[in-house]
Amino acid sequence: MDPVSAMLQALDLTDTGARTNEDIFTAPSQWMPMGRVFGGQVLAQSIIAASRTMPDDRMIHSLHGYFLRPGDVKLGVTLGVDRIHDGRSFSTRRVQTFQAGVPIMSLIASFQVEQGGVDHQVDMPDDVPEPESLPTVSEHLAGIQHPAAHFWTEARAFDIRYIDAPVYLPVDDSGERTPHQAVWLKAKSTLPDDPVLHRAAMAYASDYTILEPVLRRHGVAWATPGIKMASLDHAMWWHRPARADEWLLYVEDAPSAQGGRGLAHARIYRQDGALAATVAQEGMLRVPEQHTAHE
Image (cartoon, rainbow, N blue to C red; front, side):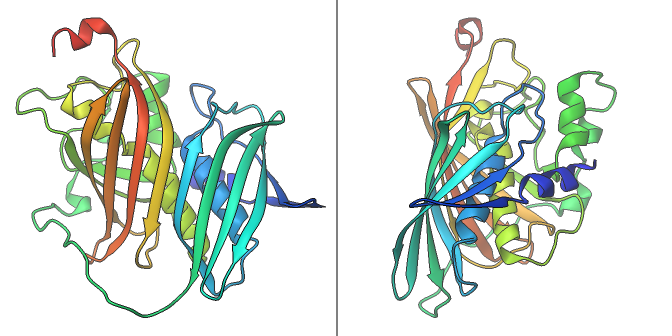
């Protein structure tokens, strides 16, 4: 199965018909090389589940979630949606995602009827090269025979183009170590014309690279032996419509790292310059002492 089809299969939730004080949905987990469920998958599934309890005129505009336990790719997920509040303009839903009877993620999402109002944005950087001019991840990792490299190049549902060299392998130390990066992303094939699915897919992709500015600042690569990383919490706000199968620019920064945790955020722009969404995430980062000793 191609990676986009695999993502869509994971996002095709089943309504079990069960009702307690929650709406109950089930879904499969995608395979991941380390055996742990991809956080972006659970975020996107939570968005789909919560949206299934909403009328068509209310779209998700924000979410705040905590990753509680690592998920197991061998197990499917069960999602319970609590219809916390429905007002005249806004609705709130809580989504709990379970495996083997215990929660692996807890999330609250807010939905709004489309309305007019004041409008401004921070402009997209004007010195960013076009995505088609940048090398693919496959070109960056050409010739490397390793399961992780195969996953990065073949199994992901999104085409990722780095403005600077990626941090998969040793980080480029030719310049100043900076807590910033920018990447272009889009789904590798056309997605259905469903605005809920596109917002879910944007959340899915937002978990790929969001913490990499923390790694870049400290000269740490994904391939560093003994490195341990995990998402702790995730927040996202949608501002303007966007398609996840068209190029989106993720402008990412890491303002702080301390205590085994790193914080990063990103502004997500459409290719025409419109600010589509904002993301923030804190993650656990544990780096072997022999690396930090030479920082």
